[in-house]
Length: 95
Image 1 (cartoon, rainbow, N blue to C red):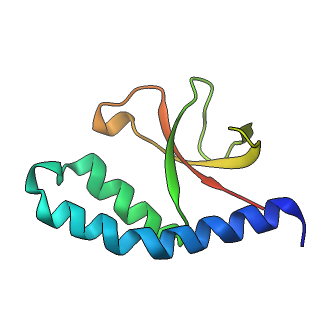
Image 2 (spheres, rainbow, N blue to C red):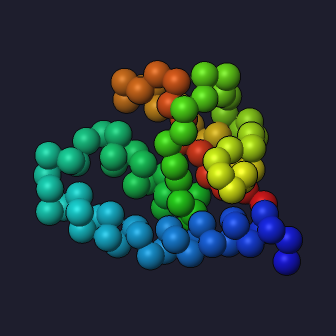
């Protein structure tokens, strides 16, 4: 299995483990139940993988970049601008 596919698979496993904990955290802390956090949670469920906020001023939906250390190929899923976060995008690791 190539490295990118392995990273993408690890991100899917991470989402399966962290989503229940994230939901519990949001339910235990009602003030953190913001539209931004709710959308982040829903995106993780919709894409069946971990979604991360990343800063990209040159972003567009569907665009792919090398990002982070170790370098991963990410795909921008959606802008956070409707939630008051200019220049921040939700991204997922792709194979």
